[in-house]
Image (tube, rainbow, N blue to C red):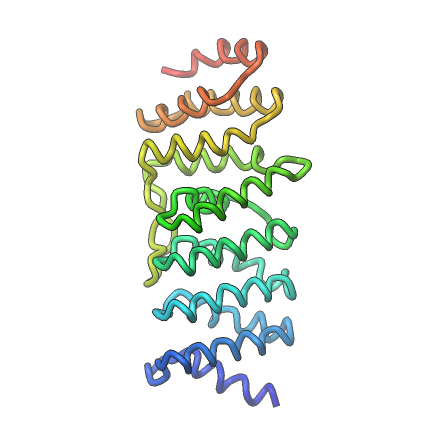
Length: 257
């Protein structure tokens, strides 16, 4: 029965002719599709392309929000099926709707803290949420990093290199769609400083500070613009390094021209 019913649901969700644009119908059909996907990994995998295409093109905020929440449930049920689509989930942190951004960050927070989603290079998009226009999103982003830092291996420290690298680029962009995630805006100087001050506060151990200090000094030597050097210099100034770190700086200072 499901095999005969699913194509009808998928056809309505795809809405290629534009004949199924009623808000209630859109929401009901999408929720039905997500419920069907939860019954089987095969159905889930075959329907994910349609679900993400709908997520990126859908104009109704409630529908996009429902899809994001459903993706969180599907990731718990079929983590291996959803994992290849991780980048597309993170993209919703740049959605034009604060409701969608908040729910996306909530889903990511739950998945990461329950070890259902690995934190990789996309963490810079979460860090960008620390400067979101919505206070609720900003607060949730701070909670994300606070909770993440409580892990025994302090993942925040391990991710700082990627975050600083992305934030120091002249241009930061992601794939675009019709719902506002065409680019990740550049941080202002004040936003960069407040963000990095918060994130660098999680570097607690001398060994971590010295190691990050050395990596930033190496990057300083290869920086291609004054802006990059200013950003790196600020991050270096936020670190409390040991005498060993100072000695290493003297060895590396010759790389900075």
